[in-house]
Length: 214
Image (cartoon, rainbow, N blue to C red):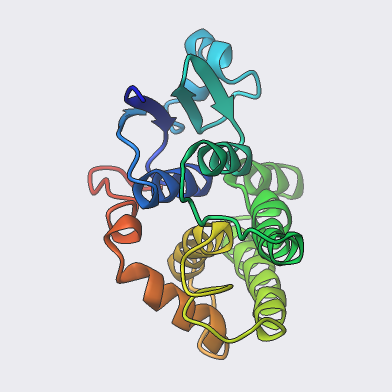
């Protein structure tokens, strides 16, 4: 397989997920930054890759793939021995449920563009933005904690190896810490985060750009 190209933004949760997956599967790739603060996602070049005007886009096997969960499932399917999704249908459904609870319930409502629009139509200041983030991230993670408590106890979200659920959880916990969300009473999500962070595939995927702040 030739080296793929990931078009991402360093602080994008969706991009963070794909970086983790590429690392876990040991797939060679290069990263090209799409600076969201400079609105590069709306340039003709990025729109040609990603008609939604978003990140990430993964250029692989001659295709431009979008939407992080779809990208990760593609990588899982083309990589022999991948354990990002369990083999049996019931276990896959449980892993997908946790991943979707984060990527489809928490993430969209806490997207910075959504919060900025809320601020613009309500006249809210930065305190409103922080309160919004804390409420919806907290509510979502409380639900995820409940979901994990219904699953077999293990090092990761489901089973002895990281899955797509863990790939979604860690970036969301990064956002929780960034916005000062209280998570001390959520032992399952916190312990899973700690186990994942001990793996280089996760730790090296963390957002790193000290020259930029938002």
